[in-house]
Length: 83
Image 1 (cartoon, rainbow, N blue to C red):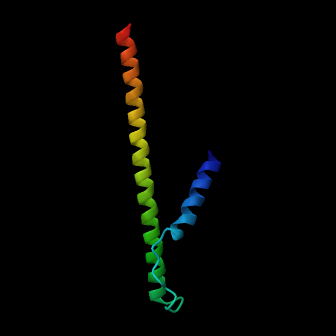
Image 2: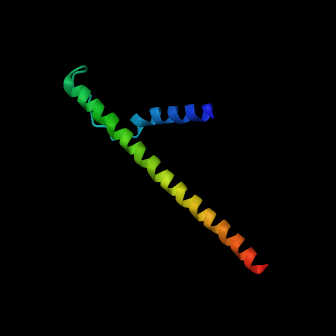
Image 3: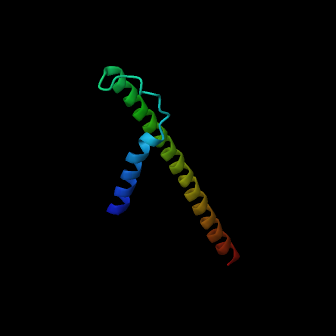
């Protein structure tokens, strides 16, 4: 369980920056206020994108689980009715 959790956390941390719609901060002096604001915006946008993907994935998985349980209960009801 710990390995899965650590893998998941590592994936989230590494993918935050890679999913960002990065604006170009290269023309700004490093360690200036504008540079830090630009980098923070890139990280924030990336984190929001990852969070939205996680929400969509969990909603889809929840729907699949509910449909699966409904099918199982319907099969059980049909078997009971046959007897």
